[in-house]
Image 1 (cartoon, rainbow, N blue to C red):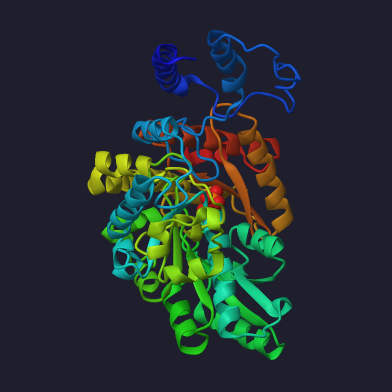
Image 2: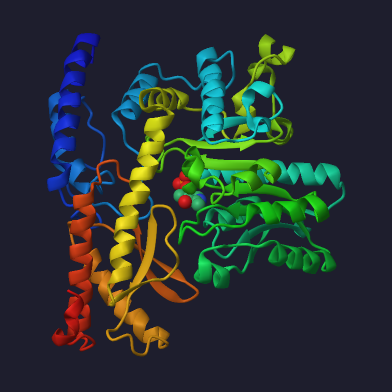
Length: 501
Ligand SMILES: *Cc1c(COP(=O)(O)O)cnc(C)c1O
């Protein structure tokens, strides 16, 4: 493709993207294809002679698009949302057009410098303490691929800090602390690093009021492990767990770490809920004071409901040298005069890979286009839409909230009506599995499941930029009907009891 052919194909691609977005509402949310569908459609080796672009793009439209789940469909309420704005799309397009791996300052000065500035914009928007700003050159922020990478990077830095402060500690005695509600990346980090992982049990407090880890649970665990000759060296605390949006009490935990166990690194995973820090009214609830006072590192994903297209996970650390101590390897071919002089940031030493995408461009576009106010408005809109769903669940006797609503997430389940023997966990669980399986077979809505202390629950997460009140109303209608049908089928709902309808 030459430049003029690109111009033409590029305009056509934009037209196709616009048509896609116009037609989203009419599409099934979830891909209606069977496993292996694409193998049957695509030849099993690359063509010997290149194809015409027109046939390639038509095949994309015909074979690939229908195999995508439409995460930006207004009725996508599964997992957590992932952001999609045209500002973000254009940022990625331009970044891709100058494709470069920007691993150190010299490799593309603007990549490093824009990231350092934009991460400071973000830190200020979220109210993060100046200790985390790049401009002070002690702490700083860096964009990682995902929250999993952010956590793994923090754990690696924590391990290096612990070993250098406690030389001679056997690696087998190190322990990564997570909770029973931490994202699965905690276990995975343990597998990757060959380290023990201990999950502190917080299921009971999560069920009661969606608070997660408290200081006392942590203190007891550390004492127990110290007595066994083990060395907990990092704690992953979560603000807004993936399962139910639960919040570990960062202030309380951080104070105990600082007083009694200062060699434990506190990483705060606020991958999903962290963006609410842009709104002053959520800062207390989302643990900003604790983060600012005690966290060694904090992760907030822009690529969930932070208006910035996947991928853009931000990681801030209080001491950048901890990352560099753990990750800097500088062979001759990576040396630069600016790097040697120490007057530039070489982001390759702040994460696991060498090369990195120019992601700050899309974040810059987003923050400039929306402004802090536009960013806040999106967060408030999502929470308010979720609240309207919560009100309906609360008012309807065949459903209950399993945990208190968290930001833009509702965790609920179906109950027999009248609420008879809800103690029979297994029978209520199987009722809910049937209910969820009905919902899952529908093309017009997507939800996901979770389990909390053995209780099967359904999750409803709001965050697609295209979701409006009418989509919540429509989702509620579908969910309520599905619930009633399951109850009727199982003889747990008599029609004359349905006065609430
Ligand atoms: C989504 C999520 C993650 C994982 O995010 P990735 O960026 O996909 O790795 C981790 N923790 C929490 C709390 C999340 O919500």
